[in-house]
Image (cartoon, rainbow, N blue to C red):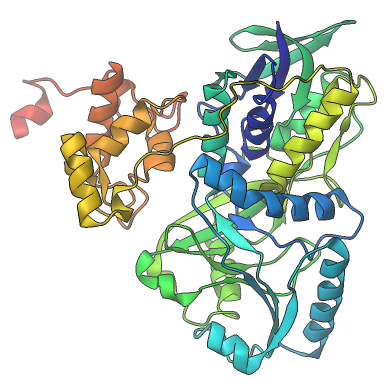
Length: 484
């Protein structure tokens, strides 16, 4: 029996697992997908928000500011790229100016430091490609960008290093409870635990209903994005927002930690919790809207597009012990600023567990440090030579667009949470993330996975389950072979 089972291995669930792994507890991190960070945590804006736009007194306001404060330390310990680039909320007219002043005062109430209004001359000095129609901006220096799936992977790996178990590809079918434990029945196993944490993203309400808790409802809100080629990385140095709407923070233009430009999202409520399809109309909507901020944004520079679902439940996060059973902790409705808040949410959930009776004793041998995969593309020539001398596999480039080596892919395959699908390799090593979007490197990546793990090449999938890439192997003498 585990002390705690965490349902959902997104950024929130993984950060909770990492925080709990500090203590003498048995932990299981569980997810229906075949890798961590496979839901909202792989498809969002990647912004570390300053915290001025959350309503004062809400969980969002408090946890946003605290999470922002913690983010740099967490990313340093976990070897995750994080850049405190600052954000600019633009104003185009007098009504927008009123909104800027309102949000500045709201941010100060929330405890956001260093907020100030900047005007046209300073704004255009800071951002050379900003629209000439922008007359001012709310500048928030503490905002930043992080890679959401790298943070998720790193937190989950650190939890595993510190003793947590992880079970992937297991959908929860039912939860039964008695006086001292829960029985979580999945498609593969039955897991017993004294406490359950429901961090299941858009499915959090479905999981809670399994114990009879119907106190909240999740509405999936789809947002579509485009990623521009790194050659256009000069278009934005800061996170550039437009005035927010009732549906969210609006379409932004932002640099990523890897040097691309990210544009999006729009916001449309949907019924299907698996609907992550992009549409021509949606992508055109975000590109047209983004040009209001940065006119040089162009469809010609888009290398890929994607959509993500935000888990919306009213106007605030839903983080609380269930009224049905205080040993069941709900972590639901974690939409924006959920990524920023994740480290702070982990602390809050730990306190709820303690209040519910879980004995929490610190581990003497807890290790907060997780070392990431060497990033060959970021090294100078001397560093590259030393790395290749240690392991010649780092001298063979597999993904030319992103300069990803065989050594990086081999390490990704053999991490504490092994990467054995194409998407898992992509999220850890960036093979396939570049201009050609894996057009050239896929066969070599599959060969490496196959060799390292003994998986037949035609058994390797894109993202697990039935997402097959190859349907079989062409044998000598087949029709195709005869034609060649």
